[in-house]
Image 1 (cartoon, rainbow, N blue to C red):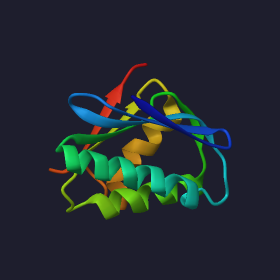
Image 2: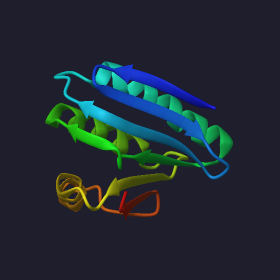
Image 3: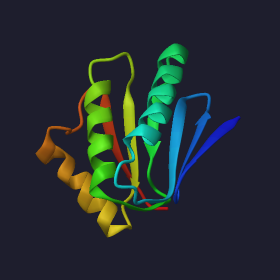
Length: 124
């Protein structure tokens, strides 16, 4: 069963599969202060994944755009999850140049892949 949260032009759809709790990022995130709306959804998904001993997946493949305010919230959330009992996978669409550029830059901000964070490029 999927839960859906609409935050302006952004939709976060959370669903549990047998292997993971997946947060699908859909639409566009353009809010200048998205943290109050996004963080509770991501924290709830992380808690669900930890309680079920499942991997947490942030799936960005269908995302059209996110601004720097959203990136800041995302980076803070990922840093907060490090060292917790949650393994995180970030999936993006390699065919979307802006997504590829953003995820390639992760290593420059201290979020390179490790035991608890994995980055997966896909073609949607």
